[in-house]
Image (cartoon, rainbow, N blue to C red; front, top):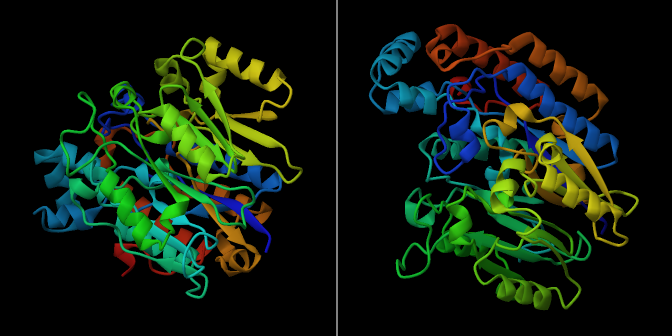
Length: 445
């Protein structure tokens, strides 16, 4: 049965702000306390979604989280009316308030790990929301993420939804940002490639020294078991600890793959030669690696440009498209490398498409961060909630919705404004009707 790789992008939420919450993400720290523009951020994301839809790709939308997260603030001991909770948090724990206002769910590469039906024992598409335990502001996402995914992929005949892994550091799971699926055709059994930062139960193994390794080997193994994957079609690889310490907090900051092609930096993995051999063997020899040398692009330049936080896409006409952020064009060695790559016959990548995603990039997320890949065959595609699939009508509706509800400037001091909470809830309540999600948010339940 014919299958497609669909991309479900996270819609940027109304509280998009720069609070510098993500230690290890250099861009997040560098832009801390700057004013953000939630309206522009959402519109930049929508333009990318609509453009890819217009190219003939299957493109969906995933809703943001409810923020400020009053429910979590109450769990932490703040009490009284919603306004009183916000006031107390702002007075006594402003960093906790900022964490409970983060719009980080926009980066749906971290929403979940997804295994296509061609890979799973029961021939259903499996979803496991990531627990994101390494960062408090993200660890509070997975329950609502699970409800949004279940409302988007609601047919039990085709889709299987799991709970997140236990919320401890031993099973730290960062979702699809550390997971890639290789295949020859989307509808055929593929090779699921799990990348991790450290071993949780063996402190003698290599690990970064400066920044945290957010994803564990044990979490990857657990997801493979939950998704009923054949161990002969799974490959595990460890991130290079040295590049984690240079700001490569997820694998998708240093590598991206699609079908039988891996595009990565030469320092991406520990024992990189061995990783390439394993993947080539698992893909029965039909596998290609574009390995960018440090002499052409340094790790620092890769992180600054988000060269590898790109989308590697197969167009309907068979060409391969690389979607990159504008920052990749602005860093001379990166842009020169890309120009040379495209100019080379049979390089593996045929075309570049550049997007202005500055609002997301300033918080540490590029094109690949904004999407969750879901391989769907024809029957599964037909079973997806149709209201979440991008088209001309939905694009217009969502832009109108953003214009109606989003602010064009937000600073950290604004997070305690009770009016922002009201605005956000009003917007999300309307969004659930646009996307036909039902009551997925705590304030609706």
